Length: 525
Image 1 (cartoon, rainbow, N blue to C red):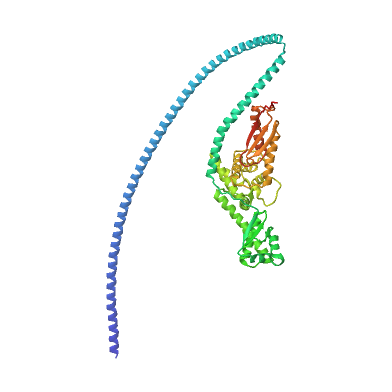
Image 2: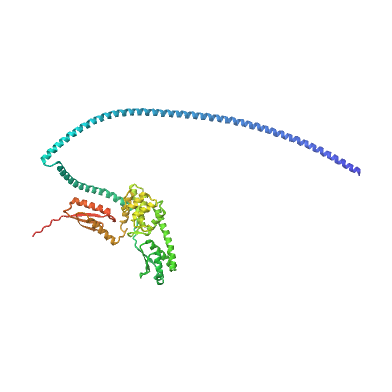
């Protein structure tokens, strides 16, 4: 047993020794291999270092060469630039030198001229002295001759002068009348041609339909049974509708129609739309009427703004104040002499733009003035001020150009015209209003205008009778043949025409015909 144990121990020791020897041998081999690898890596590193160093030296030499080339190039460029600048300075110096020589020559020439002028001045002064002496001699001779003539004629100098002045004045007056007539005729020939050409071109390029409006609106209904519902029990519905809208509602025997009467077109439009909505809804009673009318007012106000915005966009008028835009929209529901105000203003704006372009003026500014010229007719509050002046105040309030303001205020001659846009607006307003079918004048105003026309002519001296004919387009004036001659009759027709233009408002033009007739009557008995 012990032997076995010892044998086992010996075996273990021998095995351990063998294992140690083997392990030591392996370790030594690995160390050798590692050392060899290290030497190889070191050799590669040295090789790479030498290669990198070689490349760095090469790169350094290349950069040095490039730097030297760049330096030489910059040096050459600098030298060339310096030479160019020196050359330019030399040229400028030569130019200055030449200019100095030219100025010296001019100064010398001017000095010579001054000497010559001094000599001429001396000669002129001597001649003036001689002329003064001659004038004194002539005065003495004229005085002696006048004295001798006074003795011969038996008239003093003052009497002769008075007679001569009167004779010259009569001749001059007669000649002036003749010249005036010729000048006026020549001016008419040239001015009428140009004016007619310009106006015809303007009208042709700006065609607009005309609309005649009145103070009533007809509301059509499907059947007459609706009339009773609109009237209501004991007329309460119609009274509520009239109170809410301010429009008189006439329900008569006219079949399938109700008449809305009122002078305010906005109110008539509100009443028409409210009635349409009430009839379509079917619920017609005072409370519902008030509700619908109030809603319709808001819709119409919105529609007014839309009309205004659409108008300024169509015309290309930019930068207009919102309040002025709203007033432009209100023109849609306003008429003047039966002519829709918005259509009239649009037409005047286009006419003004065309005519201003013919004159070489700002067409946009003229169009702006034409659009706003009647803005004083649609204010929110009533005013006793003429609409032209009120429109001018509104334009000034909302920051419009002074030329536009003056054109608006002066288109009916309430104020003085201060720019060329004012007569253009005035002329285009007259063109738009005088078109056939454009306006409708009531009989009372028409008759009054004719009476004023005849009365104006009768106010002139020598006029016996006056007759307005052809609907006020012509004025026949009969004068006393003993009081006026033919030339004075020509002057009278001119004076009447000027007074009509200054004091009256009328569409189109008025022809003034002065009739002077002399009759010699005798009887054979």
